[in-house]
Amino acid sequence: MKLTAVLQGAAHAAQEHGGGAENGPDLQYMLMHHLLDGAELEFQLLGFGPVIHLPHFDPIHIGPLTLDLSPTKHVVFLFLAALVCLAIFVPIGRAMKNKFSNRAPTGLANAMEAMVLYFRDEVVRRNISHGADSYTGYILTLFFFILFMNLLGLVPFGSTATGNFMVTGALALVTFVVTEISGMRALGFAGYMGTIFYAPKGMNPIGTAIMLVILTPVEFLGKLTKPFALMIRLFANMMAGHTLVLSLLGLIFIFASGGAIVAGGVTLASIAMVSGIMILELFVAFLQAYIFALLTAVFIGQIQHAH
Image (cartoon, rainbow, N blue to C red; front, side, top):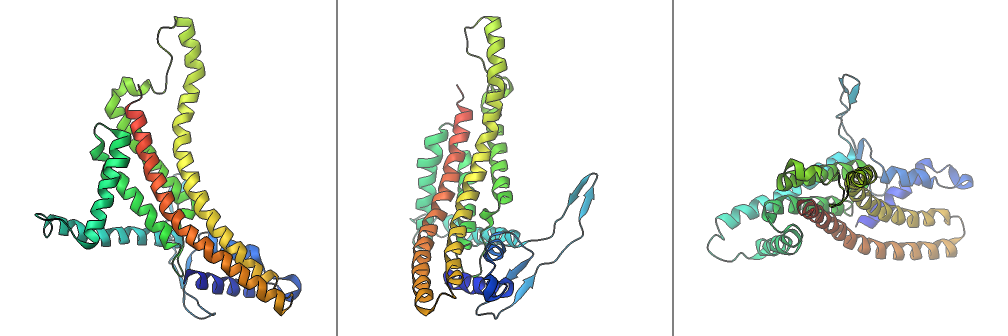
């Protein structure tokens, strides 16, 4: 179980960096070690198991920019989530084209078809309307990609790539680009600029100029706050859940020297609470992926129908 792996990893980290019984375990290190990105993959249980050190590449210098393309723990799980998407949907796509071309699909293909139709009808078409079907593939990809990244953080020895704001920021940036380009295609260049330089119609030139000065910064910042909200919402929810789990597990080591009865009671209470939170985390993994996909459809629909 994920809980067992986290508990053993926490014990190992606390033992290595604890400072002994006088100083107590270093819970800050335990939290940061499991939450932040790193250059190694740990597969240790009860202190045994391999630690894989990821390769390090020399940075690439492009003028004043320095790019370090060395893989990290979150990058590995990000690509693993992409591979899971391919492993599930490529065979399903081939089966839908060949085996189920003339009859209703069964099994996993049937379940995925139902989910795809739900997203197409209730999320994409309902929020984007005209031309919505062309965005169904992108929004579905967002949902499943984020979902698998969230779920990989709940498996033993896993890590949540969406707990890294650089990952969620990249997803939000891609959504921002798609949203603005879709708005420009739907409204034309003049209509798109009207979503930035906006003034109510029917005003005299002086009033129009005043409103442009006031509303232009507001409209421009409004375009930036939408992807920023997507980035922070997903990052904060995934980071907060794992922080709470590890903090509750840390109570075990804080009260370890308080006697057998106290330590046993705290251990049982901590594990019970963490088990409940892990179930809640499973729900949150689906919910946050759905919210990200839903808001993407909403933002695209808003800019395409800016009038």
